[in-house]
Image 1 (cartoon, rainbow, N blue to C red):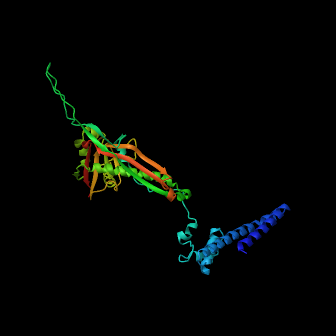
Image 2 (cartoon, rainbow, N blue to C red):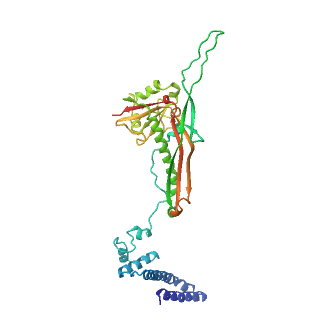
Image 3 (cartoon, one colour):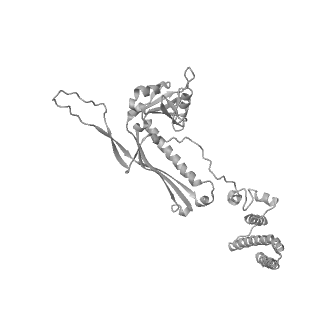
Length: 371
């Protein structure tokens, strides 16, 4: 007779004893036998598992194995059933070279050992200045198009004598063509992981996509900025000159100074003979610094790289310099069907945009020596 059948008979007898005790009002004695009942149920599950393994191996005409392998299976079954094992059995189970299921190898049982999981993913704080916010953002409804702009701004009214013909002129227009490109990313996530994780993974991925979108936009905008011819300079006086002479006064009035961390550190340390700092604080936002009343926008050294010991500095009005053609913004979508065969959920981000230089005179590019 199978061991599991014998144990089931014992279980039936024990259940009858407990019922009889309850019926006769002996509640405490009945309660005392519950632990024995639970232990017996676990022994039945263990016996049934061993018997199933034996049948499976015989059906495949594979020997059950050595005594050592059978011991491993018994230990593993006890772990699966939540039963305690001895220190000697635990050491044997944790030996990485042991045949069978071992705790030291994730795929062979290590995943059964609970791991502490914090309920929030630690996000690395990084600079997230979105240069798009400083551009002229123009929503568009098609992938291609043109934007007309005026050409030539130096025209004048012509003096004329009384009763004489007034001078006739025309208006010249240029146009900026845009061609929206698609930028995207897909992250597949195991549905099992989604069901078990406790760290707000999907929220984190959404924020991660936003960071990627900002990085993509900034890269495109910086590439356009660097199409300007850089003016070589030895110190920050070049910024003053650009504001005073090289930019149109109306552009200079709304100009901002775009620097990286290295050159901001240089500017932030400059003081006059009375010890007063070169940079001022914005009255609206004390965390922002001003150069002669113009806001300083700080980008990371990773985004705005040094050229040896020379720091790139852009001075001007980015809104006049670049138009950002935005096609529907950042689109986030989730699909459970796409990863059906892999039991996965796909999270997708797509952004469609183009950025074009519109007024090349609205920005000046300086390379300032820091050595």
